[in-house]
Length: 240
Image (cartoon, rainbow, N blue to C red; front, side, top):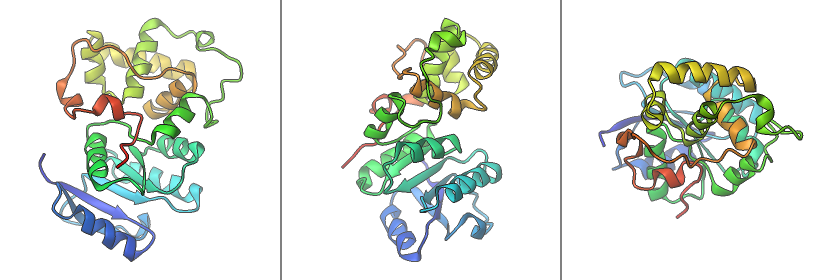
């Protein structure tokens, strides 16, 4: 893959220098470093990926993620953390994070996970993904209401599973053999029915209501699953 300009945001210089050293020689070229989102400086090379260290103050991180989504709407943001709380994971994903990776990940797995994030996949630790599927994150408590009570059509349920996979509209259209315009119509309808504000919230809702990924491939956009383990690590983090 071609070189990706990468912006690093961390709580201290030592962490930033260590991460920068680890990425040296990879396809992720560090184009900038900052101790907080407010300290980001404009550079001639726009970032294609952002790596941000999770702070102790979760509300602050959520604010940072919202700010990054506003400033860099097309740039995937990957959270690096020691935190294993599924609620923290859910909050970060809900705020726009593309991936939630633990700091004890191996360098090989980190690079692979970053590539998956660039492909639009959601990457996270396996145990936390399981907690989301079991409804432990608490963002959208099921409260006894089954999925059937929301009035979702079979097609909308298929699209929800595609969202859990991290699929873009084009990929969903190819998988289900429908047009992108039709995908958008169904998407608008299902978001309204489950009261989700965006695709990420819908994917989290689907996980909390037991809709795990696994829709069979139809007409597939092969570029979206180019990584050999992509389907297996959409909801998990490769640990080295």
